[in-house]
Image (cartoon, rainbow, N blue to C red; front, side, top):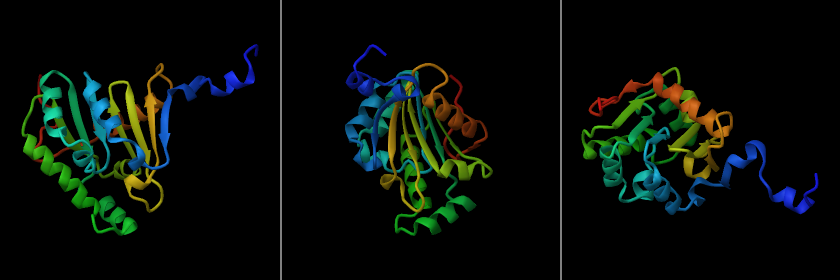
Length: 200
C-alpha cells in the first residue's frame, strides 16, 4: 500500500507473474522465442499441439536440435491427434481449410520418422476420449516455460492467441496446463513407428 500506484500497476503479483508475454495471434510470436526456448531446455521438451506441424518451418533446424537434446538426456515428447480419428474429421469440417488437420498431423509424423528412433524421443496419439480436450488447447513445454494456445471457434492455430508462461511455484497457471497435458499423455496411445517410451 506504500508503493505508488504507477509501480503497483506495473508489478506482476500472484498468478499474473507467471505471464511473461501474450500475443493476440500465435503467428505473432517470433520464431526466435520458439528456438531459444527449445535450445534452453535441458530436462523436458513436450510438444502437445494436436498437429505441431508449424514447428518444422518455424524452427528450421528442429530435427537436429531434437536429436541432440534427446541424446544429451532431455526427454522429448510429442502428443498428437490421431489423423484418422473422429475428432480430427470433425475439426476439419469446422476449419474448412485446404491444409487439413490430418495432413498437418501427418507432416509431423513424417518429420519424426526422418529423425528415426532416438533414445529419449517419444510420441503418442491422444486417446479418442481425450481428443476433444486436446484439439481445443495446445501446450508446448520447455522445462519451466510454456507456450499455450487456446483454439478459438473455427480458427486454425496460427490465428488463435498465445500465452508465454513461466513457472513460479506449483499452483499457478503453468502447473495447471502442465498437469492437463500430462493427463492426456498418460492416456495416450503409441504412434506406429515412433517409440512411445524408450528405456534410458
